[in-house]
Structures are given as structure tokens and as C-alpha cells.
Image (tube, rainbow, N blue to C red; front, side, top):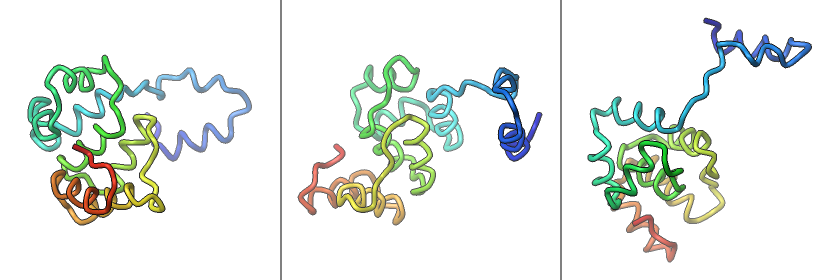
Length: 136
């Protein structure tokens, strides 16, 4: 299997898009990314659903891929799992959701929460104290 750098070089050097049909390219499902994040932290989907204050069936739909996760859910999850700011940004990109924008007060507050390891509840309180809509 080619490294990511080797694959990037091959894509740049290719004269045709034929190499894109190769086995090196996997369709990465967001649900597998979410499962990996939970597994790395020893959590189950039920733990994350509870930590994110989600309705149970709605949460399971997002974890099993039958419903696309909202940006709000992904931010709640990032805070609950104590992801760093960069890891949270990657999760948002992976889900096709807008990244946190530092010039937005609400997004800046979430970035602050992620960077300073605030809990979901603490970050929600910060947002509300700034007159912004909370995550909960």
C-alpha cells in the first residue's frame, strides 16, 4: 500500500484520472470515523449520546450513518470526547460541515473550549454568557 505522500505524488504526476479507480482509494464513511473516535476513548455510542444530551434514537441514527450528523452534534461530540481543536476541525471537514471560523464569536468560543479543554457544559455556558446560541 502506498503512503499518503506517495499517493499524492502519483495523483499530481498522473496524465489521466485512471489511477483513481485503484484499490488505494477507500470510501470512508463518517460512521466509521465516529466509531473509531469512540473506540479510541473506550466509549460506546450510548455513552456519547448521553454525554451529548441527545435523544437516543436520533443519536443512534447519526452514529450508524442513517442520518447525517449536524454541525451542532459534531461540536458537542468533539467537546464531550475532549478532542483538540485541530481534531475537531478534521471531524467537521470529514462530515462536510463548516469548520470553526475564529472571526465568529460563537465559533471562537467553541475553539476556546476545545483548546482549553472545557467541558461541553462549560463551553455552552461561555457561549450563553457571550450572548450567543448555546450548543445544548
